[in-house]
Length: 313
Ligand code: APR
Image 1 (spheres, protein in one colour):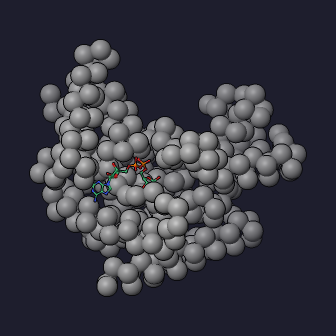
Image 2 (cartoon, protein in one colour; image 1 turned 90 degrees about the vertical axis):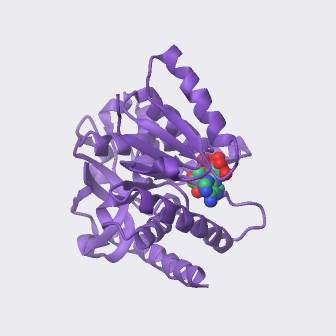
């Protein structure tokens, strides 16, 4: 049986776990690509051998080149390096931008109809780079950040109120991490706005913890960063696209006039279907939320200008 093909570039923690989740779903074939020889092949074999136990027939192959990726419906890009001690943010930006530039050239040439989902940080800037390099329509180049930030906030709210996560809806917009913009009027528990459930100081504490959610995990793990929730979040986006679910999820995408933002990548609610981001949904934001979104977008714009100068060199 032929299944839609999904390429995952970067067979590290996020990529490997995403490949596992996709294979276990039994709906897709997976190509895992990494620059390190043996790692994608080894992980792919291991995943294929889990199939008989778990009952999936998804094909999983590993490779160091891109031949097998041809005709992918979705390409998830997690390849990059983490920030090392002594490395500046700009240095990290330059290294990951070059990696993403090279990877996107390879995958875009072989899968011209794919939807690209970026995971590599700094996320919003990598979406910008991927869109420029691929030349794909903006709706087919997305970044995974808002789903993860919203999931973190939902988990904290559910634990605080002792309710099921299924009844907690959250919408986190803006940049990933520091510059995220939670829109609290649209964050609800069983349809009731969060402000009616929690006093302001508790609410602020949960938002602060969400904002620092990635760092909290990095500090605990000591080596590496979060990957269970990031891989689950990216798979939710894949499902929405390939099953044409028309889910409304916060994703990093280019705004061209929406929210008063021009030609900048930022996290906004989008309708996800077979065409990728089929529509940006415009929420009515408060003055503070709008200002925060503008600031977030401005920070991304500045980083994008820096990265473009770096890539020209
Ligand atoms: N081509 C293919 N793979 C590459 C390349 C490249 N040019 N450069 C690096 N990689 C691979 C690494 O060999 C590694 O296996 O990308 C993988 C990254 O995996 P991890 O270091 O385990 O990082 P992970 O935790 O999976 O996070 C992935 O998501 O959180 C973001 O920016 C963060 O870069 C990180 C990415």
